[in-house]
Length: 185
Image (tube, rainbow, N blue to C red; front, side, top):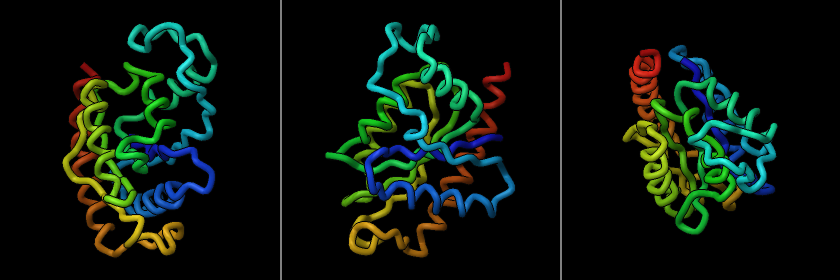
């Protein structure tokens, strides 16, 4: 099992980098899958510039082919998402929209942060996941900018979030394994 921890913000001084590294540090204690931190910022994806819809799988741009190869290599995903204006960061939505089949029949979990714990971002992500044929797990980690960040910028998560993270990961691994059998048929 290979699971990507996708850092979904590209904003300068983003809080998401601290959150994604926290998740990555915590998964090092687990032995149930191979985890990799994937920062969408490293892929320099422009605003969707492929001339053919991704469902056709006819990519023409090198950045899309590179992104496709990376995402296709995973069985499941942990999306680390901020909440921007009650929704998903534009950079994350753009990165998701570049691909289609690479997401299909895989599993997703969410770690979100924002003034309301990022819950509205995850609500939107769940709808997006459904269209991509990704099974999203119920448990999620919701981090408050007020309570889990000192001065809204230094990440200091409350202790109970670790249990929420492990619950979400347990569900994600179970669904990821189940869906791997679907993809292998």
